[in-house]
Structures are given as structure tokens and as C-alpha cells.
Image (cartoon, rainbow, N blue to C red):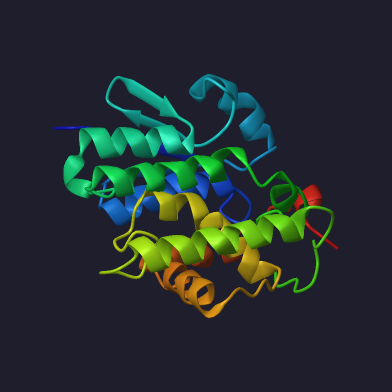
Length: 219
């Protein structure tokens, strides 16, 4: 009997990188075992350096293969399971999808710092510190550009759900938490992400967690 792949993740309330990998796998229909370890806990300190090459999450185990980093995990699924259609089929459109995904992967430092992911909270107006408004404006541009140029045929950035949507899903949670309003195109896109059954499942689980990470609690 085949062994199910295993995805290690952190707290659903706080772990944005865990959400990216988890959501992509869920929407792609991958059957996997989830193993959640609370960030910064004693269990984390003992186990993370053992299962993760970087002592970070997410990490995905598929048979003898170990894949880490959310984008690396989703690229692996796209390559090994092309039926999941996690990238647009058109090469030119796929290049744009990869570009905006990598922009998310390496950018938006002020937003990440001042608006940490916190699914349990509603904190409208908080976190608007140096550089954050610039990041918000750029993300709004990305949402509008992708939806208007490439989003025909679906509700997501490139029509059907793709890795790009998984990469931006934690930003959507941040905008929800901190009350960030975009233009009608951006707001409709964010609602489509939040209405995904997998996102509702993630939020429901996050709401039951009792762990608190003080520096992710904006006051």
C-alpha cells in the first residue's frame, strides 16, 4: 500500500508560508497527511531541525523525497502531477504567473513586517507604517492586471486557480484582518479566495488554536 505524502506546517493562525503550500495541495486535490507543530514551542525546538533542512515550514515528504519552501513544494506538484494544472498552460501567461509569484516570494517586506498574518483577529486601520501603503498599492496593481488581462474563464488571477493564487492567499488574509480595501476588481478577487472551501477550512481550524505569538499580535 502506498504511503500518503506528509506536509509539515506551523500554526494556521500565523504561518503564511504553511498556508501557501497547504492551500495549493488542497485545491489541487492532493491526498496528504497534515502534521502541525506549533511555532516556537518546545516540540518545535525539538523536531523542526530534524524534519526540516532549514528548521522552517512547510516541508513536504513524498516517499523518499523531501521538498521544502512553499514555492518549491508547489513547483514539485506541478511537475510531478501535471494534471493538477497549477500553472497556466500558455507559456507566455505562465511566465507572468511565475513572475508575480516570485515577486510575492521575495518582496513586500514592510507589509510582512507590519501586517503579520493573524486569521483570528480583526484589526482595521492597524499596521499602516512606513512602506506598507506602497506594498498595498503594488499588490492591488498585480491583482487588477492579472484579473483584467488573464483572468477570463474563472475567478482567480489567471482564471483557474494557480500557484500564483496560493502565493497571494496569505496577503488576502492580511488585507481581511487589517481592513485593507482595494478597487472593485481586487475586492472581488479577494472574496473569491476567501470563499474557497479550503480557505474556510483553514480559518475554522485557526479559530480553534490557543497558541499566541506575541510579536505577531499587532496592537
